[in-house]
Length: 334
Image (cartoon, rainbow, N blue to C red; front, top):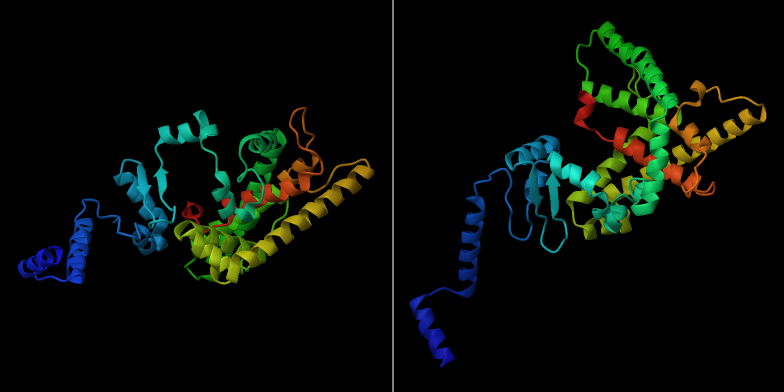
């Protein structure tokens, strides 16, 4: 009976199964394309990933317009079965709820730490009690009058001796064209390294040199960005094969660790020698965060031993430099 029924049905609707599926897929795709929100399309299987790739070169403008058009909160749907769906929001009430009034209900979790593995166990990857301990320490250091005075003094010096000098040289040579975003990115990178390590890497100079540490930071930021826009299995495969962005990240990671560990070791040795002679470090009166971190005397209940400090310091300062000066962000052009 079933075979007779199917034969009768085929005589009425002379379509094969492949033709039927193709027609269904076409109607489905047309329905997606006819959505009112033309800025992003939620495709079958691949989700909104194509729209993201098409706008990767203008990510900030695209995401800002998307949030503006959707009332400051938007659900980005990634490919099926990839766990890449992300809730994006810039609404002040939501931000306050997540980061302040109900912060404990929004832990970063192991997946966040896996993506940002280059940041180690510092404050940017930690949760709960480890995060509270490091935040208390960081807040006490950054809010000190000594550090604020150091920020004002070194920033002014970098503007006078670095930024103004470079711009005057451009005018003097009569080139007439300069990439201000690159200039301010270099300025921010140097200024951040001075505040964090007390060392000027010299990224902002008249010849616009390539600084290995700065390049390693750029490579790390690029790899971290792509870890967000491709499925985890893809970048884990690239990491296992040591190719593509993951290879750049691995090479940059070595340079970052070498730079940070070298300056931690050097500063500890300087402070040890200085204390042995009964004086203070002469490097801008020791106002940088690294010197303050090493000298920090934890209060009762803070729970951070001296043996933990070198490991935490490396992770903490990697996070600061990566987020403050490592990426090509449009805010440098402001």
